[in-house]
Length: 255
Image (cartoon, rainbow, N blue to C red; front, side, top):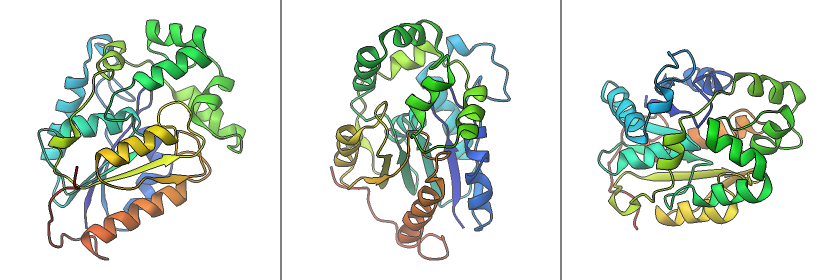
């Protein structure tokens, strides 16, 4: 079966995958790896403020190098942006972007935050912390249907992000350099990172069509999480066959 490497987004950590996805995919025979990015989750937080996008990409490279092919990279939000950056110089057998920052950079997200939540935006750029209230966590990451306990649990686990990484994400990427096939998925209620227009932008950059789900930005935790998991599983099986093993390797998506 395929090796799956899950990458979390800004202010999150590997816990967001452990809630549902690690068990769901492991039970289907996949080899699942869901690491904390440097200075996140269970790792030492010292040095977070000095972290750069390049340091995150290097961490992904180190982890990926130890996994057996075929390798599938799955990244949420900032994690999707990191995967895109990584694939400019490396390759995998498949990549799945979940509510990912687009290859054009995070300028759209910054403008939306500054317009819709100007005071919160200033705090985020100064501290690296996305939200300071449960209500804002729901607004940023979840749909109105998400149970209160899910939002509360997520809010309690959120952490600061490197403000340098947030600034690094303002720079556009080079999808034309990517040879790995890419699947693009998003959430219909995501106004923050990957609204419909930017979801289409990302899909177009990788020569594919976006797939959208009835969820908020945190697709792996929201009410449609199992639909998302099943869609990822389906995409992998289309790529490698029903066993998840490697079939004919084709070139990347057209640009």
